[in-house]
Length: 225
Image (cartoon, rainbow, N blue to C red; front, side, top):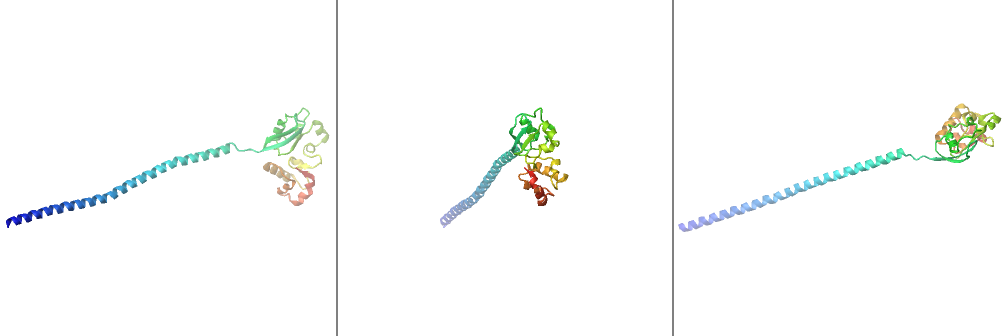
């Protein structure tokens, strides 16, 4: 009887120990498995943050380089603007008559210099050497004898062979000889051609304030470009 009780107790003790070991193993593995995803998630987040930071750092130098290049290109354009060229025919009392190339907005004295300068017999005061040249124009420098014979400087320098007034080169006094053109309109004509590089047609004269079709019809036979 006692032997049976001892066997039963021993068997019960072994089963209790086995149960405790199994329970410990099961709960321990469960905790371990639940910790793995958390660790992986943490590592993944750290790698993602590091990648984003590296990408941002690599983009910043590229943006700065692009901005500097754009600024440099812009500065080059401003420092070296392309200037248009004009061609004028210089003749009369100059050292070498001919067609010369000048930069836009050049003055008459520069065109004369291109032609070698004035001769000893040139009537320098008969030409407005400070005037801005116009592409395709003829700059004629009269002689002293021509000026004396003409009596009026502008008649020699600004009228063409057919007696018409060149609205691209005529001075204020010459323009005022046109019907309906007073001092204010003459000054407006000069200002317009200096701003736009000269008239491309005589009809363009109607762009001047105060010179409309009525006035233009009265003077169109007396002007040229």
